[in-house]
Image (cartoon, rainbow, N blue to C red):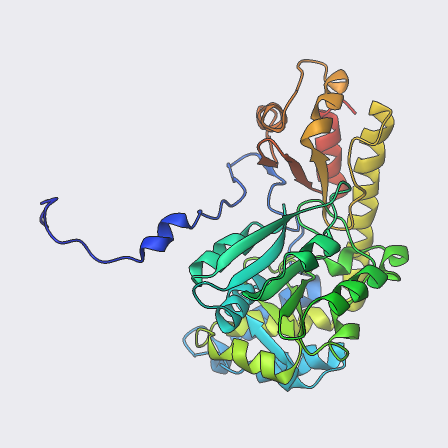
Length: 378
């Protein structure tokens, strides 16, 4: 192979220089990784059995292509949502569907609007499609600022993401505020309600939270995005789904990679939807542990350090509140998010740090929550 630096180089899109790399949560052998919002538990027991059975059947073994149309899965999801199969798309995780949605709606020069800080992939996916990302700051409570998102719409806007509950702050918006927002958004602009953590919202909050499956029939420009990667424990199998009008689903399917959802993932997702009793037990544990962690830190510091109350499988500590943790620590002090990340890493715990902004800490099980609190002197 020639090392001649003067030789012609392959042509690569110059705008890719503006695409930041997606940074996954760190994983170090022997440490507690609570940086990626994964479930600590494996797939639900009945789902694990379905996976094993699928692998054992000759017709569904890995040497065979999966059903490209994912008909059984889309039908089952549709039944769960009260929608026909034609209004459901599946993809390699909901993040893949986010990209397909950008590709189906936007071209070079078009704009994709999203809250910030929010799901880290939004600006990346916009750039990949050649669109212009437009980040709108969260409000003072760490929530999606729906008025500001609506005000950011221009004649070039094609798509708006609303992450609810928001990642990484764990906040939700109300249905009343969301409906006001939808009334302000032009009908030709697609709105994606990203509900990756919707199953974890507590019952009282859920009663006042916008749910995409209840609203897509009212708003033709609205789609919902959900995933099996979080509470269902299927992050490694990569399967998510989008639902909305038939026209939008058809457009998203046109830009899908063929056979993107494998056979095992399809079977596991169907089994997950059939395992609601098992899922309820897991949801309760996550809810209980996030309340435990939040209350323990707030009580020990004497103020609302974890801000705001989370509705997901993580808690968020704003940069401005990090130093409040110092009095709890027996052998150190922390002033910044990076300090907190380093402090916990030295004790075998990895969290997700957004330097200068805050820390997101995954909370799922009693054991892991106890290890985190012990490292904080609680």
